[in-house]
Image (cartoon, rainbow, N blue to C red):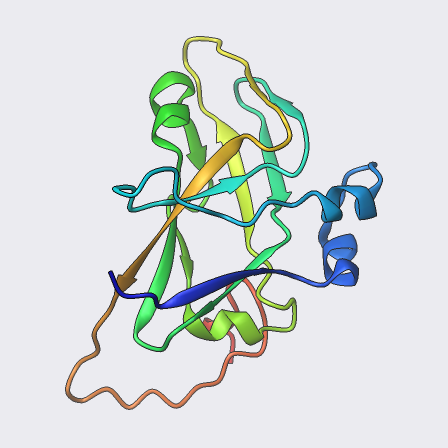
Length: 165
């Protein structure tokens, strides 16, 4: 397999800026686990929750992971819900699939990867996540461009910034 990326933590100050919950942010930051694959045959890198939380049907939570990713040009990181959470609880990512471009690493927010989950259960199931539990998975893939591609834009911001000119 070819290595094309490296996970890192964002700075403590960036994490504190993005973390909206009333917890000891420095302690949570120090315990952040970098994403990793569970088995040698796993395609996805598990992203872990930095906090305990409960999500009732219809509720949404935005989780600052404390993670950023340096990705080689020509590759992208796609973030998906963990299969088991989707199957058992109907947990969904609010943006369906998160797309982390290689230039997101240098964004103003240090490329901080956020995961926004919604409990879309129609069976009344309440999701309880403990700190360190897997909440999403990221898969790297190569992408291609057209022969007449003339893109020259440069990313400056975070979410949705590439279409704001």
